[in-house]
Length: 217
Image (tube, rainbow, N blue to C red):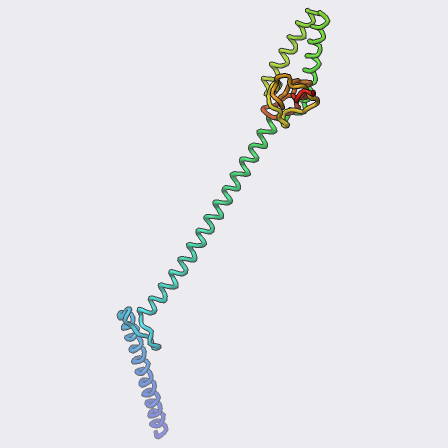
């Protein structure tokens, strides 16, 4: 009986301790919750334990966000500039490639044309020789051949130069002799030894010319 009362008393004491502890914990949680609510509703006027106000915290946060925003803006501008340069380079490459393709189409027959103009030289020489020998029929035939050949040249962008009297141009002419000016302008073409040809405006064979110079005394 005595032991039962002792055990009952001990159990009651333990229960009281637990109730006291629970009550203290509840008050602590309530205080914490109340403080949190006060800080939440106090807004910018809240003061932390180190004396920093909510306004100061907000100012620091805004400054940090502004710095990040500026950094991001710089990165965006840098990416835009890089993209612009890349697009410009790509466009230049595209145009150069397109030009190479066009040149390949236009000048792919350049070597063939060089050989073909030698045939034109032979025809012209034959026309001149036939006229000299009085072979009128032959002259007429060869003239027709030469005319047809030149028309084919023109159709495909191959044209004969006519530099007589023009100023010497090293990109189109090759000086093979000098001719006394005799009233001509010095430095101009006074004689054509061999015709020059251009393919779509590009010189594929220089004209062999005689250049007008001062007459020797």
